[in-house]
Length: 83
Length: 237
Image (cartoon, rainbow over all chains, first blue to last red; front, side, top):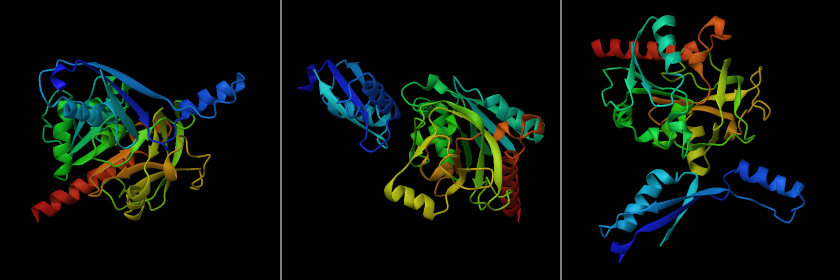
């Protein structure tokens, strides 16, 4: 199945409870702009991966790069979307 | 003593550390290139401050996979002394030699100014030259220095007396105002369980000559020298 996998997107965000000062500042700016109904903003980032699909362990390889490099499991969670 | 200072692409405090060891302490020092895996028999490895790999992804996250880091991790795991300053501290948490993480300053501002620190523990290779509970001054210069740790991990850190430095005011009070980045429990520097790896956000190497405004940082390196001397003497006995 995963032999045909060509693209994946990894979404990384701070775990709940870890301070996100950027998100907080954006939320405050929104509120000042009159968008006060947006009570909370959490930031994150995503990675678009192009993959040469040649093995059957692609899922675990993606998991590996997420936990080793793309995300820091101490403070961040990640989610993988495969295309 | 022989000190190795690792240079990563983007390091900018490597020369400060080098100059301190060579010219202020008159000890042997070598630069170690990040692509090398040879620690050249150094007895203390310094991971210097700076912006390795442009701080891309997370501070220290990419440097942590440099070839030299494999050797540094091995060295640390066999009891070798490692000092990570600022960006070096970030590398040490990223590679798991130290617990927790360093996240964005709570102010979102890059903070570059002198801070006061309380020396919490003097029973370490890095702080034995300080008086107990000494209040010292040295600079910080970072955007991601907010030390994060929770739960059991943080409790252990505190119970084991592994917090060596805390941000404080000039009288040694641990106040919210004296905490420049939001670090939990005002933590500025910690050691690992075996106490041979120290990570700290403030810059002791930039506070080791009078002309730089403070000599309070020098004792970190004098502590290491004393600890190494004790080790050598014990080895010979």
